[in-house]
Image (spheres, rainbow, N blue to C red):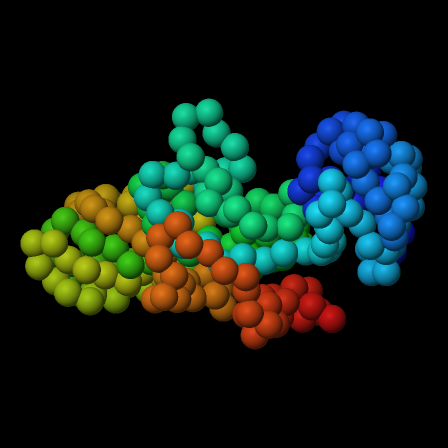
Length: 243
């Protein structure tokens, strides 16, 4: 596939389109060993070798990272008040990555970071009901009655109740520990569901999303590329199974 050189540089994270055009015109870019000053020059991402200021740029059409979001950062690509999840990804190739879905400022856990819009849509589409599982510490004793109410669909103050959700009691007590699997992504949904049954979420961590599970070895703030097995499982969610 032939790309304009300025687009190639932009998509490898070298800078904005206007910034990379200046770099090219300043003679900072070589293609197959030859200096070029033409932003419109076509390059083949599979065969051409591109260097910027002596550093080789590697083009990838798509990148996929499993990120353990810590509390205190926002799920956004930029923010004026808080650190964003993207600030933690320091050695990625693409410059157009984004988080798939969102987690609240104080919520931890699994986030997929990618630039694959089709994949993001498949995971987030309300029609697909992709399951998401959370671990939470909850103020109040969670009971089997709560389990049944969640299965029936809790009223969280919208036109329709939340979709049926699977609540598992890990530990019941003054501070309960639970696992909750939901198949939709309403604003503050888990917190609102527990508020509806008279309880308060004190700590929340997403542990899985679709076929992806947060590894125990991945500490908050850390990330890694998806494995081939994880990618294959994600692609199975696409229309036609990704074929």
